[in-house]
Length: 503
Ligand code: HEM
Image (tube, rainbow, N blue to C red):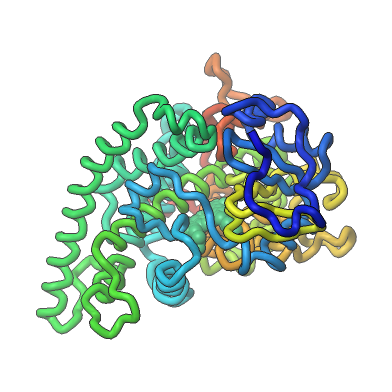
């Protein structure tokens, strides 16, 4: 069993990063790891330093745990060596082998990334679809209002998930009914499968019948997305007959319209196929729904546990928006404290705690050889809580991003500040960063305006005042979700715009 068996020219000059001595056949170093993964990686970095190597089964794996290293991998050497990810077979099948998140750095990725940035998630298109997003936010508020009326406990964990699913669905396809449930199943199996895929030998054994389940899900998903596309084509046909006029009730052109236009356009540099369109639909669901929902739930939990932060947020909203209307996406630029709450949530609870890339060409980083084919893990979670980079890192203190005292002011999540990388960095950084951050800020702003959330413990008791604290335990999955459902009784705030929801 030879460690890092790639034929290296530079390894004589530059060793591989340090690694545990005892490596087991087949499992490699997997016996040293437990979920949540980021915690095990922190433990090992105390022993082997900020850059070390492991074997995940037979896959060489490099772990980086400082902002300086993140910069070397994702800025200095990204273009030559670290511009790709690993493809899992669930993602391969369910994205019709066309996942933008997983395809290698090549002509198709460049083309589809340009479509995403210039035609789908560009400011003008996203802004035109604002009414669709507002509608989805109102749906969440209405559920809370109903429970506030009846004083029944609500599983708040479910609401952000329904919201992100509905929002992505509406923006992408112009409808959400057909696809809603099946899209959630697809996102779920991606999460599950990546776990098995990670534990490399299990993949070979096809543990848990995954391949069969993926095929079964594919066979149910495909007719649904086909039907949605067909329906859209009919709408477009009618629109053409009316010289481009939108149907009554149609807010705007949705992403699927743009993609179908491109499919028919003979002048496009690459002719986008129906399979590629379907792949992109799945990509947006899988990349954009759970991550955004999980971050929103963490923010709500932090607000419950930090009433002084909630109070300041309420004051900001009173001052900027007032009580006579609901906050809107357009208010977000004027709500610095709410935006700081969102950043602080991403610092402590990045939904993807360990960002992954693949080394496509051997490279020397920080005087160590990184072999071709290695999986690279960036422990974003640990850097967000490292006292070397943050003052009082375990405190939830949004003010750190606003006050000019600690060198933390102005740090943002857009991939330029390597101590805060919830959306990654570089060429393959998340293209949904603005959509996600502004969406979370808007939903939080409206929820804070309208409701107080009183947590409910298992026995059904409602907690109030100083006792109103919720557990911040993390679930042992690959994405960092809260371990327990957030059960709360929402209470409508006196004089708040909650009254407008019935209109
Ligand atoms: C809180 C919400 C979100 C988080 C935390 C998040 C995080 C990430 C991260 C860490 C990456 C990998 C970046 C890297 O390798 O440097 C990524 C990639 C990606 N994300 Fe997001 N994301 C979120 C929301 C969204 C949304 C709303 C969309 C789309 C509507 C989206 C679409 C994508 C896509 C397409 C990629 C792959 C980009 C590529 O490979 O070129 N994400 N995201």
